[in-house]
Length: 74
Image (tube, rainbow, N blue to C red):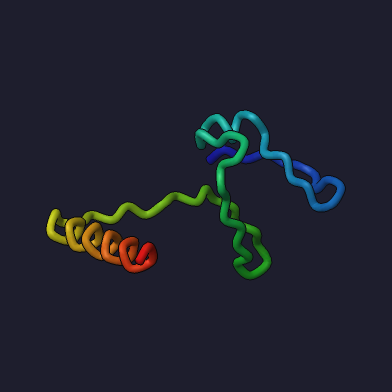
């Protein structure tokens, strides 16, 4: 486990050391989730959930979007 001691900066700023950023492939703008678990703070990257759709589900979504677009234009 990679561990570093850091200090809390002005306005609560936290700087994640480069070694840790690199190991987790974090870069500027990466969304992070901050959780409080008891007396601990846990920070982790926000990973988008992937959803698998069957082709008929995709077709239904597209049809509904087109209907809504036509309704809004009309």
